[in-house]
Image (cartoon, rainbow, N blue to C red; front, side, top):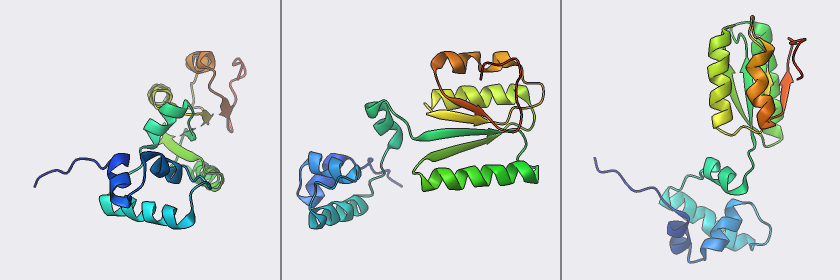
Length: 159
């Protein structure tokens, strides 16, 4: 099976008969575009199979709408309910939640935190794994990423 090249904004613009700037404004939800033009652009988006790359957009804007949720034990019904509740609130606010389970393992927690930082999360909500040391969050503090501890505190931490 031959693979198709990824659709681009230029492909959408050609399909809809508009400029790249118009496509970009529609993707951003701008009210500056006439409704009939926006409808034509959205149809072209569907027709060419375009998938918006939010990661690339975040890099361009130097801003992320992704919040990392690092939960110590998602098999525990309490923490599962907590995660679901936070996720609902984030989605209603237009924030994308990334959820990770550390299974009470500080090493796994460190891997997850590193990965989320590499993805450019805007902030973190962490229910620390047992055995977590305050030093586990130094790099995050230094990067200026906001962190909120949920359910467990690290008394020696500045967070």
